[in-house]
Length: 341
Image (spheres, rainbow, N blue to C red):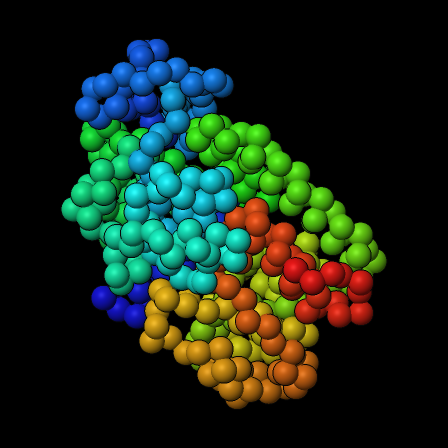
């Protein structure tokens, strides 16, 4: 496999924000059955019905054995108090969020290489619910790589599935909140999910007040490359920045920018993203800083050595969104009264 394809897999597999199956009662309203056929007692607040990526879903009871195909998905499950129900996870890039780190460390990893698990490994975990970040990757092999089963294949095994971002959707705060609340409904944790969204919204509002009137800082997100540079189009507006690359620039995947274009746009700050455990052989943050010194020596950010290392999955859960917006906001606007993240 070429290095460019490997990079594409890592990037798409980690980006941010359910068919009706027999395991939970089909859309015809039949009673909920486990995969062994034993009926479960009714649960307050259920049945739950919603649409995910064009699929109408109905759950008569919360799923009991949860598998997450990536770090973003499993962090959402843990934040919703599902540590005892998570039977397996895979595809870890960054250190887990601090408040769930102990639970995260105790989970079974389906793939030591940190990428998607094999079909055999996932089936052996015997989940009744599988969650993945990008529908394009988590539940499709159309690009030649991705998750071990399609959603139809999981349904045939009486396993429900849920995608955080459907094909054709654009990541946004609104979409992240929507999917978190939907996941809370499916798991019987709607009140907890809403409480988190309220807390995160309050944090974002406080950050916005502290940054009100601040001039946006021109910022480059640097992933890798010696020219063109691999980057991300992630919006930095909530943190008081403006991404150097436009919403429709750079192609895919990941977007790339020629060095001369970056130099002409003169970034004032650079966020250095790392693939972490997804690619242990990738350059370290220190090595990337050294490379930037050679690649873009005349830019304001390099001359001032204004760098900040960020997680590959920054902004990707409500909890990370609140923390990362404040972290990056403090970095871009140290003159503003932002409390520590």
